[in-house]
Amino acid sequence: MTTVLVAVTGTGAASAAVDDRAAFVAESRAAGLSAAQAAGLQDKVDAYLIKLSGKGTQVSPNQIDLGGAALNVTVPGEKRPRPLGDVTTNVIQCDVYADYKWFCAYQYEFMEGDNIGMYRCDVYRIPWATWGSWINNQTEGTSPTAYFTDGSSWRMPPAYDRQDTGVHWQPVRSIRNC
Image (tube, rainbow, N blue to C red):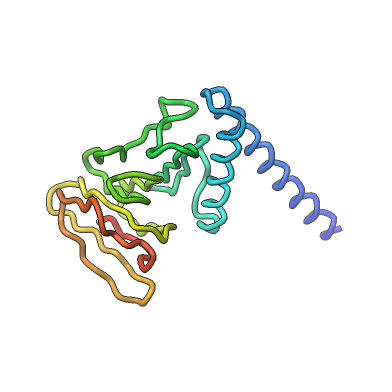
């Protein structure tokens, strides 16, 4: 009986994930994305969810809630994320500038590509191996710490500061934003 229960539970979870995926793709289409863009966007979000090993929840077609941070995903072919779906809840705090009290890590240089906006003090995984950028617009004097794959760390400059180019994300495992 236990085996049957586990199989039913696993099937239900898989079914819910498929239903959620379909709902987010439909929401993307309703926001004006082509079928190819909507599917490509969902594929990117799905890849992040796998890479984050259950540490995030998709909350809109292009946003993953990291519990104190938001990973914002670009529509395929676009340079920066934009609100999709319910624009009252899907707000992009890390555009070319970071909202006040936010630390923003950008996938690519010049604040382009996907980004992670961090607002609650915690450690957040950096899922990129690209050359990127960051903005620290937290309260004055707040210094994030970058943790590297080799076990070392770097205390980053205090707010307000930014680095538009030359940030090599590959050796960065995570950032504590405070």
